[in-house]
Amino acid sequence: MEHKHQEHAALADTFNANEPRVNWHDETLWWVRQKRDRMAWSLPEWEELREAASRIKHNVLGNLHDYLLEFEKNAVANGAVVHWAADAAEHNKIVLQLLQEQGVKRMVKSKSMLTEECHLNPYLAEHGIEVVDTDLGERIVQLAKEPPSHIVLPCIHKKKEEIGELFHEHLGTPAGNADPKFLTAAARQHLRKEFIQSRVAITGVNFAVAETGEMVVCTNEGNADMGAHLADVHIACMGLEKIIPQRKHLGVFLRLLARSATGQPITTYSSHFRKPKAGQQLHIVLVDNGRSRQLGREDFRNSLKCIRCGACMNTCPVYRRSGGHSYHNAIAGPIGSILAPNLDMKEYADLPFASTLCGSCSNVCPVKIDIHQQLYKWRQVITKEGYTGKTKAAGMHAMNIVLSKPGLYKTAGGVGRWVMRTFPAVVNNGMNPWYKQREMPAPPKDSFADWYKKNRK
Image 1 (cartoon, helix red, strand yellow):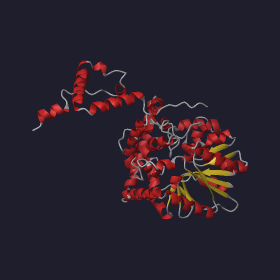
Image 2: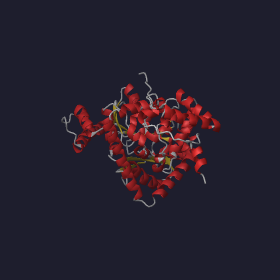
Image 3: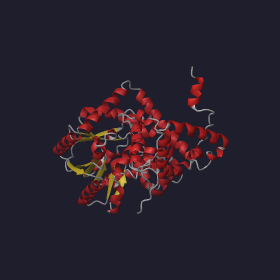
Image 4: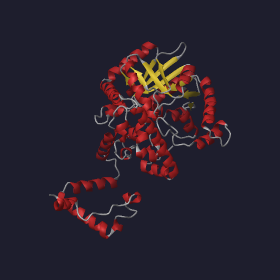
């Protein structure tokens, strides 16, 4: 199928066409952000936890090679089979081969943003294997034939009435019933049959402990546990950056993750998988897919500290009012906008510009990633590499000339103020992108330099 590229601004226009939905989306995510604040402020040691997490991850990134080999050695000793995938294509081939060896045509999968990043579901579908997503939010968007719009709240863009219609169509629930408890019960019955019948289960990985070779998977629904415990084969897919050095470090991250994600004190299920049970196979797929390249970019390597909590999305004014699908990437929002250009700078050149650079994302990040500063740096790299639009590049070039020459800047300012006073329609028209959604300010009588000369004492 031919890929039709649309940038963030155009996709956001589509989302913005329904203003009541935009307001509801904005308010819902801000409510989650406020829950996060209350939970964070309830811990006097919150900032110490953030600092500790950032330093542990800094250590991991500086010694990633050694920790990965330590994890592999211990995981193999535990009875797991470890696979290495250089990119998404290799990851998908490994998973397909494992499934074909089992002869299965249908399997269950818990929420895994890595498999979304690798486009695993459509790849397996092309090879005749159906994936049933078992996270409730992911199952809802799967039934709607949509990608997740948020890494923690995959269907946050959908209202309960829309979910009721989907369940009526696909699960046979009564038409018009949008009661959340009823719909959740219907989903539980539907998914339970899938769990019992599935011989293979795929899970993501939240943390992998180098010291012990074990993995920790966090869910609020227990779906990862149901899949992995009932299946004959458990396949765990994880990015290289999921490593932490020792088990004792888990306490730091588990306290930060749930509070930052949903404002909970702890995730309902934090399940440890160390070795396969008798008669079961445990496969772990370690995936690079550009992470080594990002590690080599000094300005952007801190993005690999991300623990996928989604706090930066819940606080971002642009994300809240443009929707997750406008980012046209598996991981949306501020963190996705600094990860995506590493995968394909041309495809995702627009995303670092989808930000106000207000810094709210950096303020809430539990591992202290300098997200807004990386967004700013990506803008410079992308412009330097020639991936910005010609109009924007020409405008920035003209501004560079004017701002670097004081005499020209003073003259241009005077001309601009005169034009705005005398012929305001030259600026206040539909051709001016700023004027479309803003009121242009009244031009001052004098420049700041002139005002300063008159008023300084």
